[in-house]
Amino acid sequence: MNSYLKITSALAISLYAASGFALTSDEVKAEKKSIEATYKSAMAQCKTLSGNAKDICEKEAKGNESVAKADLDAKEKPNDSTHYKARLARADAAYEVAKERCDDQSGNAKDVCKKDAQAAHVKAKEDAKVKRTQEAPSNMTPQDKAADVSEARKDAAQATRDAEYKAAKERCDTLPAASKDACVNDAKTRFAQ
Image 1 (cartoon, rainbow, N blue to C red):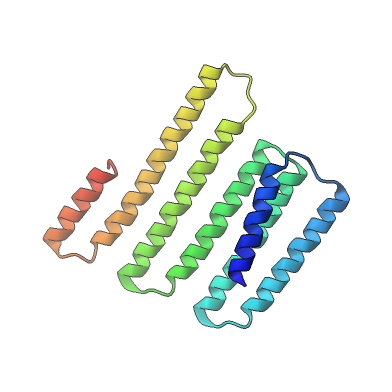
Image 2: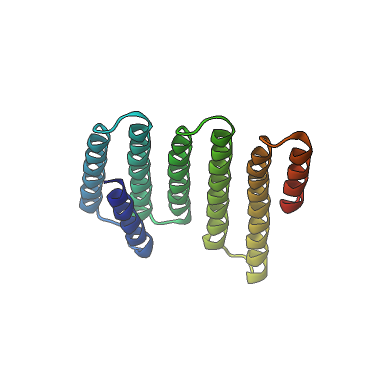
């Protein structure tokens, strides 16, 4: 069921992204009903599960609904802002599911899992910012636009490195003192901290 939703959602995302045409109000109403029906069906499927599997299923259903709504908004009002919000919705949905999956673990493994989820979330959000900068309509010269994109990429790379460093540092916590120091120093070097 969940893999079906992921495939269906991915197909819908690609269809929305490929089309540059706005929807009619009847098409919007039909899409909203479809999103709602898919969400209700997914949540009904989740009720058959228990424990953290149920929680993960519910996060996936809510995330797919959020992404579908954001994609619909981008399709209804295609512009750089709505496309950016759709990318953020995908990043946030993936993050919520990843965090929920971490609940199956405990101790340092759970902490590492959450830091990895945060790092992936930061990367996805930063990638969305870069894409927004690339796609933003502009009356700038091509050189100025390229400079803006370059700056956005530089900022994104730094934010991603910082988040990845925190995850790498968290992995070092289970090591003995001497090994931990070497591990942290290696992480600092690797992620330019």
